[in-house]
Length: 117
Image (cartoon, rainbow, N blue to C red; front, side, top):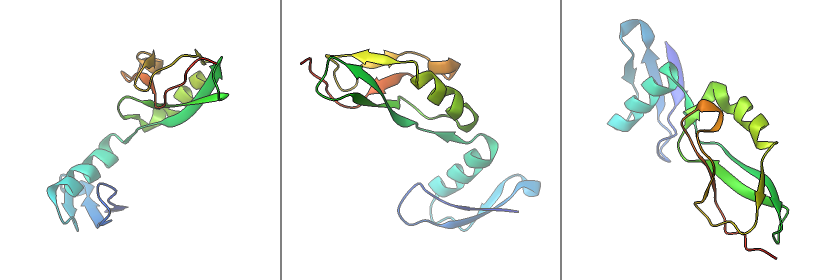
């Protein structure tokens, strides 16, 4: 029996997942909690938010995120890849800076406009 706290909404339900009984979930107030618990145990994913170096802009760093959640086991590889990326101003929020980062299927996108100086 695994115990999790649901992060789908602010309610924070305390979930119990019985893996031996086909991932039976109890403690959830809505179906989304059950879906979250099963996915978290079978294949945990996270949306990565970070920054990359920005050249030619007002700021030195540009905030970025993955376009979709990536496998939790890939987070460190993606973070290492971000150390090698330098964005060049101008950049528009939503602009794809790198496609299919580390083979995860997610794109790295800018989350802020960065005009050229």
